[in-house]
Image (tube, rainbow, N blue to C red):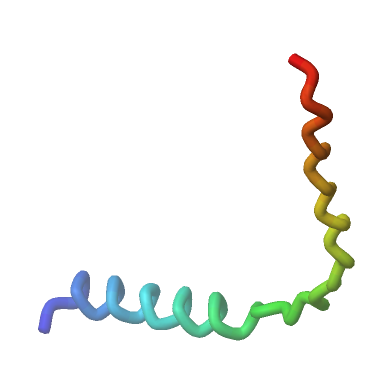
Amino acid sequence: MSNTLKTILAIGLVATITACAQQDDDDFVVVDPEPISVEPEPTGKY
């Protein structure tokens, strides 16, 4: 293989390893959903 191809492969390998090593585990925050509003009852008026 040519030196250029080896260099490109080496840079790609290093970039992949560093990208996989920097994964941060974010904490998931659970938020209570807002209560569903009740529909207004018809009063017979328009």
